[in-house]
Amino acid sequence: MRTVNVDLGDRSYPIYIGSGLLQHIGEYFKNHGISTKSPLMIVTDDHIAPTYLSSLESTLSAAGYESVSKIVKAGEPSKSLTVFEDVMTTAIEGGLDRNSTVIALGGGVVGDLAGFVAASYMRGIKFVQVPTTILAHDSSVGGKVAVNHPLAKNMIGAFHQPELVLYDLDTLQTLPPREVSAGLAEMVKHGLIRDGDFARWCREHSSELVALDPDALGYGLERGCSIKADVVSQDERENGLRAILNLGHTIGHAIEAVAGYGEYLHGEAIAIGMAGSALLAGRLGRDSSIYDETVSMLQSLKLPVTMAAHLSTDDIIKAMMHDKKFREGHMLFIIPESIGSVSIVKDVPVQLVRETIDQLREGGEVLV
Ligand SMILES: NC(=O)c1ccc[n+]([C@@H]2O[C@H](COP(=O)([O-])OP(=O)(O)OC[C@H]3O[C@@H](n4cnc5c(N)ncnc54)[C@H](O)[C@@H]3O)[C@@H](O)[C@H]2O)c1
Ligand SMILES: O=C(O)C(=O)C[C@@H](O)[C@H](O)[C@H](O)COP(=O)(O)O
Ligand SMILES: [Zn+2]
View (tube, rainbow, N blue to C red):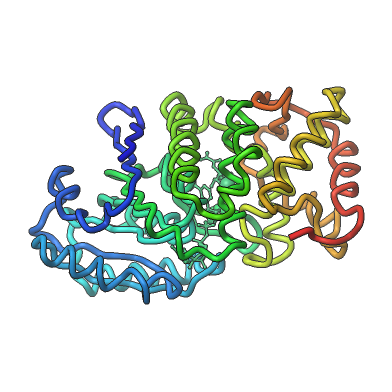
């Protein structure tokens, strides 16, 4: 088993990564002070539940835990205030109290939604992340929890750290190929922002990663989690450094909102956004080879680097104005300096951004 720690003083927690961990969830819970005296709530979705929910419920019950379960519809549209209220209703009807714990069993959608419920229920109760997607090596770490507003991604949320992250790699074997690639977008992002060798490793091992080779996945997820944990430990609430985790997200989030949530998977939109950031880097005078290398890395992981022709530049620019990096009249962009290093740049001219978005549409098709 691999363990990565997120160092946040009295809110520090471990990320356990390995095979067969879910069978021992009761022991992990007891070691981390999760009470058997208050009911737990498991939140999951209707793609995951048929395979993983009943065995999780039985394992917890055998360990002395009572639980209620809430199954939401799979997909990005479930990150909404309407579904948030539904999950809250289950928590209230299930008798969760202030010592209860919410378990997020799933990908980033379930993690962000269940985490926001945990952050808000009775003004905040404990939660545990049980990620089941590759992408969730990112979403389960760092405590950003949220739902979407129709006009902008992750607009309604909180910072609420989990008690622990239990990442059972066996669950990843049932992921559909498109979700595998989408998850790998955030893995290579971690290399692109902090560790060029790791980004190149992702490209060199792309066939194994796409084929869900357990050794390659174990290493890639551990390295991705370590980079994320290191950044979050230095700047939990994104007052500075943490913004680098947003590489590709200003354009990517706008694409998700404008196309309609769920049309592009988050990782796909972020891949297009990272291609856009690399193009922008060239327009700002950085080495144009950054774009070629970024694109070759993304394509090796079977990710798109252009967006559909019908998405309008005006709509995307408008959606970008809701970015959380837009403050006091200034938009911050995360711009690659080289493969493995980025900088936070203020006041990128809107005309350059507009030209970059136009260029992302060239060819007019999404290469998924
Ligand atoms: N909080 C953060 O720091 C953070 C970081 C990155 C992304 N996110 C958010 O995460 C979300 C995307 O997460 P995601 O890509 O995991 O999407 P997701 O949660 O929608 O899961 C992807 C799909 O895979 C299915 N699935 C999940 N686990 C499975 C398994 N083991 N086997 C088979 N199918 C499985 C799900 O039902 C869903 O259909 C976005 O909303 C994004 O904004 C948040
Ligand atoms: O953890 C972070 O910080 C990130 O930026 C990670 C991103 O991959 C993630 O998509 C996050 O939800 C984006 O946050 P937001 O603050 O831009 O909504
Ligand atoms: Zn992301």
